[in-house]
Amino acid sequence: MVKKLKFAVLGDPIEHSLSPEIHKEFAEQFELSITYERLKTTKNALSTTLNRLIKQKYTGVNITVPLKEDVFLFASQPKFEISDRAMISKSINTVSFNRCKFFADNTDGAGLVAAVSRLGIKDLAGKNILILGVGGATKGILEPLLRMKPKTIHLANRSLERLRKFRNQFTYKNLLFHDIQEFKGKSRNLPQIENGLDNFKFDVIVNATSLSLIGGDNLISNKWFEKCFLAIDLMYSKKPTSFMMQAMEQNVNVVIDGLPMLVEQAAESFSLWTGLKPETEHVHAVAKKLIEL
Image 1 (cartoon, rainbow, N blue to C red):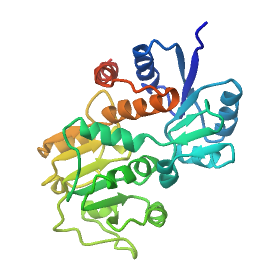
Image 2 (tube, helix red, strand yellow):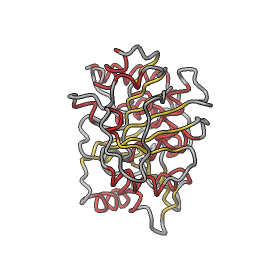
Image 3 (spheres, one colour):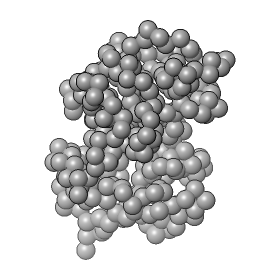
Image 4 (cartoon, rainbow, N blue to C red):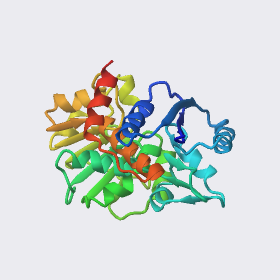
């Protein structure tokens, strides 16, 4: 009898997750028998849920918002090994239980790099990047983006306290930190936060906040898209997000949502769990159809 591998994705909210369908597509490529569940999990219930899944012999789990940083704390115990990229980001989206020592990783950055590579963009040498938001998603993508050799990466956030904590964690030379209000001409001009962006131009702008799903006021003024050739929203929905709409209205050459990254990071997770590298091109098409239902 073929063993059925058990997986799950943990988060809150979780109903919208496409991870079960994506991983079942991967499994079919190798004729693997799997189950993959969506498990609504609060921060308070995280440890109990993970320990239960370990006892129930799950092969592995994916982690989504708002739990990625909390799982890092859970994995900081002797029975876990943490990958270098997860250790740098202090944020985890993939846990494997099918080793002698449990393994925790973050595949978000690899997923983003693969998604960008699908566009024919292999590096960002000499480019200036703006990232909106400094939550767990940004922590996961930052180090892989730095390996693409940009000139600078600017990070903007509403909460200045969180921005300062992020700055203390990531001390790379070419990172600059900003009050997001500065991108709407309303800088609070606080110490230890860069100011004076009037003549700066960005080649790539990444939205790593969930605010684009809500709509409302734009996070930044239109002028920041003037020289931008690539706009990426890490969120995804049935229709283009407000951030994507703004970028398209400003004639940005390439505008994508987080769906390609989702598929590619899932492939990285699947490979980590099974040792098998799935083909993703067909799965991108499947995910796009699912989101349009």
